[in-house]
Length: 557
Image 1 (cartoon, one colour):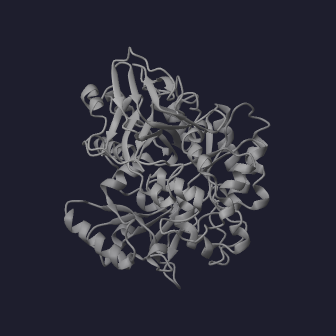
Image 2 (tube, helix red, strand yellow; image 1 turned 90 degrees about the vertical axis):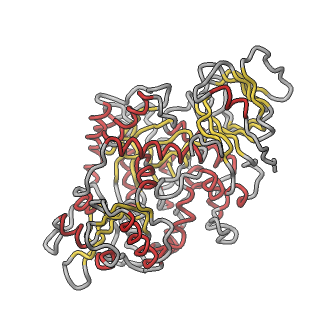
Image 3 (cartoon, helix red, strand yellow; image 1 turned 180 degrees about the vertical axis):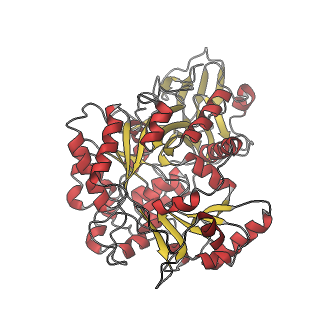
């Protein structure tokens, strides 16, 4: 393994001051990229033009240009393409970093103590807002209640999103302000958890029902949104993520991205997918937006929700949950509604990304794509987001129209024991089935679903080719036949992510004419052990020929 030097690209630090300069030679690196044929290509130097694009990719035998303005010694480190997270929530990631985070709590009591401590430290807040709780991680065996939340904070409304964003936990004051009572009916596509033996709300609301409370939470101000965007960018760049697919972009999010672009502070490339058809039309009008700010921002299409999540038992299944007989989850749309929304977007050539977790939801989306492909021809690149539980009989349908499987490897390691509880063994055969779906002809695009999971692509790489968690479990991997190779995993985080967002001619590979988006790391992702890969240190992150993060320098995070 390469030993870290005390100083990193010091010459670059002196030369740029945050903006790309003239032609630059990045020399003495162990370069790795994915070629046009999907194979690994190696190089030892890059020449970056003053436009921020790659002018030359050089190997050891190639002569170095003498007319460059700056030369940077990579000190033998590994240089890989900037990582692309193909499914996350930019603003939610930023706000999660600025509000109460319960994702590290391992028991209800620990969560209650952290909530109470946060409330005491923020006495002026009208609401206590946060996210990240997970009753499965707590070993609770049930949802928490409003009474248990009241024990931590009773004098102010509290609203806490579950880790997957598909359920919320309210205290009694929040329920009162939202008008949620025993008389409140479950909304379409949602469920109010009830006190056993009564109609009284217990404190947790699932999927569409969450809107009953979230609608009462004060909306963030533009300045709050701008701060959250900066926080999210800092986190992403520190993790080597240079481009993302933002799933569920609102008009307010878009305006924040535009303000950052106008002010020159938009560093991460954002391929946006609007939060529904109305937001899509409001943001982009008659079709996908142009690429803006040097290919930093584009509204590609629309995100449509078809079901909920497995953890809150909202994922739509063909058969009832093994641990909740009679419950098949929550379809959020009828088949006709789904097709109408997809048609409305496809008519104006917006790309369509449908959230589908359960096997019934995936079958419904695949069927809709089959039907609509006859009408909406051309390069559509239909996307299914998550594709977590797929009936093995439905997997071949991914290949019929090249449907992109936008999947999150760390979900498999995080969800493993919960999935085993929710599903019987036959259904697990199609769970997180990366290799089978790819073999059917589906392009893979990997991401994190941050803030549901940390936006750490190296943890995702390790999970993808081992099917094991950070603890090394289970031995040999969970359904190891569904692991992909290291090369396939790296492609799914780079070229696959670019292809999934219609950006393969712009970024995703380190090749002449592409943007110089790359990451300098301290180990070889193709040879390091899974444990070592999880400990990868991002030394520097560059976007468009500009260094936007340097470990320990104060740049980025």
